[in-house]
Length: 418
Image: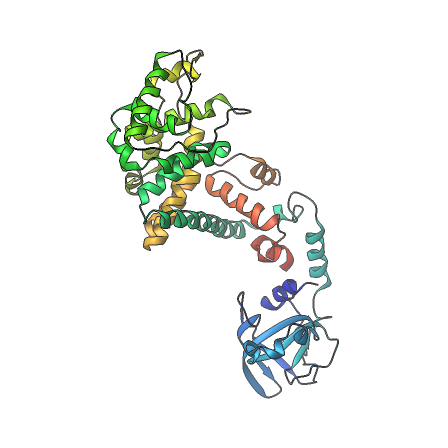
């Protein structure tokens, strides 16, 4: 028995309430168990019980043992002055106060306790692996919606932190996060540092010259600081040295990596594609906010790097012809990790529900991610058709299953209840 399990049992009243009585020998009727309090103070607030012939309204505190009241120093804390019932799993000492005590041991289903013990001891992919396929679809639907909202709220807080750093310039923050996304996991930090080092106002002055945009992005990541044989990188280097001095640019300290990476994800290619995106669009976040469909977004991001890169992955190293298109999977990645969270953050900050709903709708219209987590759930016959599903499943696995927060999970609740 844990205190959290005890709270769960009390919250949902999973106990035998026949002939309830306090340890002081008075009859007890639970009218309302109260609202679970996750902040400082008693475990449940605004409860209502009837003891003998008197109805009491106030707070309820739960402990494993009666002696925990003084062990936790509640007798010295004014927050506990309005406690009307002390609920314990095991009564061990006579209380030093006049608060009625209810002992729950012997009133809770042994099957529930056994199921909970099995969940806590499970070492499988998720604790409820054997029971989860039996969960009703209606429970899954509402739980996925909440999981996705939690995930987007968490990502929104990251955006909020960035916005505070630049006086709530939404386009600038979108540029930072978009660049980070283009860096993939390996080069994300370096790409973000690069984006922060070049204000959008500077890029706007050169948006009609793709080679100048490339020189700025590549140069700030120290990819133009050697002697080249080919004319194109020589030209980019010359351009960068001029604008570096003109704008007093400071190359970033971070290093980009090429090792153990697919050629299509090389930082040179991703930077060239990012430069082309700047070349093709202005005020991109504003356009995204007003876009009517995912298809509009896909068209804007359906771009190809400059002609030089058709024959290169590295400078001075020609390769067979291949257009360096951004690709559907990368566009979906950007939708999931940058566009939807930024839209949700914008809607949250401005209290405009339409942007939050648009973010959720677009995730439903984006293909699901395919990774070790989603594959694990699919093996358990859990549906993973859209990014709405995959983002919810990732949140479930990382924030609930891995931490064995079964009591906070709708699926865990359903399994224990049944």
